[in-house]
Length: 66
Ligand SMILES: [Zn+2]
Image 1: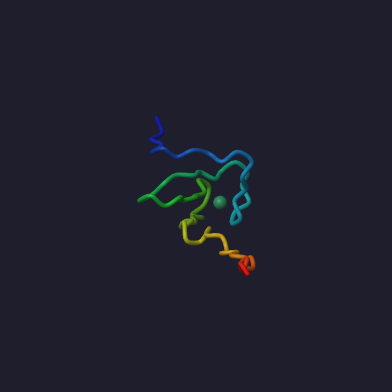
Image 2: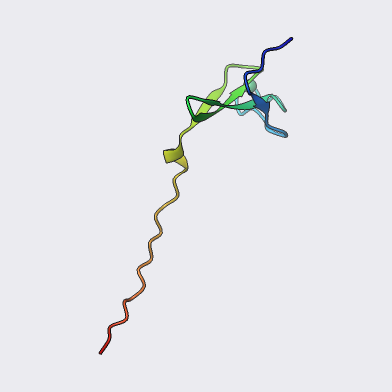
Protein backbone atom coordinates (compact mmCIF):
# COMPACT_ATOMS: atom_id res chain seq x y z
CA UNK A 1 0.00 0.00 0.00
CA UNK A 2 1.28 3.38 -0.98
CA UNK A 3 1.56 5.81 1.86
CA UNK A 4 0.13 9.06 0.63
CA UNK A 5 0.51 11.61 3.34
CA UNK A 6 -2.47 13.76 2.52
CA UNK A 7 -1.20 14.26 -0.96
CA UNK A 8 -3.81 14.65 -3.58
CA UNK A 9 -3.48 14.58 -7.30
CA UNK A 10 -4.23 17.70 -9.23
CA UNK A 11 -6.58 16.68 -12.00
CA UNK A 12 -5.41 17.67 -15.43
CA UNK A 13 -2.17 19.11 -14.13
CA UNK A 14 0.89 18.65 -16.25
CA UNK A 15 4.41 18.59 -14.95
CA UNK A 16 6.41 21.51 -16.35
CA UNK A 17 9.58 19.47 -16.12
CA UNK A 18 8.87 15.98 -17.43
CA UNK A 19 5.49 16.88 -18.99
CA UNK A 20 3.78 13.90 -17.45
CA UNK A 21 0.02 14.24 -17.24
CA UNK A 22 -1.78 13.80 -13.92
CA UNK A 23 1.46 13.33 -12.03
CA UNK A 24 1.26 16.46 -9.93
CA UNK A 25 0.38 16.07 -6.30
CA UNK A 26 -0.59 18.88 -3.99
CA UNK A 27 0.03 18.83 -0.30
CA UNK A 28 0.93 21.08 2.56
CA UNK A 29 4.35 21.03 4.06
CA UNK A 30 4.76 23.13 7.19
CA UNK A 31 1.68 25.04 6.15
CA UNK A 32 3.12 25.82 2.74
CA UNK A 33 1.30 24.59 -0.32
CA UNK A 34 3.64 22.33 -2.18
CA UNK A 35 3.28 20.80 -5.58
CA UNK A 36 5.35 17.82 -6.52
CA UNK A 37 5.67 15.53 -9.47
CA UNK A 38 5.58 11.80 -8.81
CA UNK A 39 7.37 11.03 -12.06
CA UNK A 40 10.39 13.24 -11.60
CA UNK A 41 11.92 15.43 -8.91
CA UNK A 42 9.96 18.53 -9.79
CA UNK A 43 8.85 20.43 -6.74
CA UNK A 44 7.55 23.88 -6.08
CA UNK A 45 6.36 25.66 -2.99
CA UNK A 46 3.90 28.47 -3.05
CA UNK A 47 4.13 30.86 -0.19
CA UNK A 48 1.28 33.14 0.67
CA UNK A 49 3.44 36.19 0.03
CA UNK A 50 4.01 35.05 -3.53
CA UNK A 51 0.31 35.05 -4.16
CA UNK A 52 -0.26 38.39 -2.52
CA UNK A 53 -2.21 40.67 -4.73
CA UNK A 54 -1.05 44.13 -5.54
CA UNK A 55 -2.45 46.69 -3.24
CA UNK A 56 -4.65 48.53 -5.62
CA UNK A 57 -5.58 51.29 -3.28
CA UNK A 58 -7.35 53.81 -5.33
CA UNK A 59 -7.86 56.83 -3.21
CA UNK A 60 -11.11 58.46 -4.00
CA UNK A 61 -11.04 62.21 -3.62
CA UNK A 62 -12.30 63.13 -0.24
CA UNK A 63 -15.43 65.15 -0.12
CA UNK A 64 -14.65 68.50 1.34
CA UNK A 65 -17.52 70.04 3.22
CA UNK A 66 -17.72 73.67 2.40
ZN1 LIG B 1 7.63 15.58 -13.61
